Image (cartoon, rainbow, N blue to C red):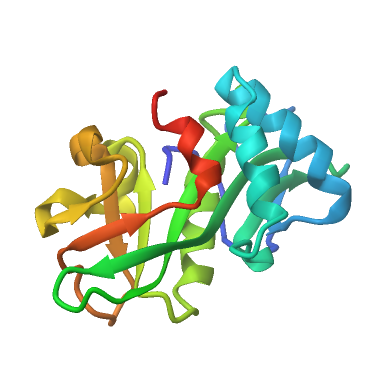
Length: 202
């Protein structure tokens, strides 16, 4: 978690801080997205990434068959303002040894409104969505992001296991996390739905 002082627990528990310079910052809690959140989630990703791509990706995933409602979480203030969002959805994985494609998970995207960075929101969202993902049957979660952030959650470079994907050129930034007490990652190929394709060249 980030070096935020104060009580933090996952789920629907209120998040607080005792730092003097953040007393005025709104408290927040983590919960699944609700219909009233959708416009705020869209605008949050546009602002956080400075482009529409991730916002449009979220909208596309939500309207498709790989969306998992309980794995789309927001950090919301008491007044309903959405300060952060994370989405985990289904993608495909084919083991080299069997050439049979099965379901795995992708963590993408994760964003926090810029004024609220450094408050532990991204870490709390990631920890909670992975805890929810661990209740499911999919054996692995994949992510494209900074190893310095995701390593604390059990992610390691997918290339270490001989795993290929459209993001293999990202090197150690393309990472995999096995479900606790589940099988270890194995060599194979990750397949993303078409809505991810426009992100490849970024």
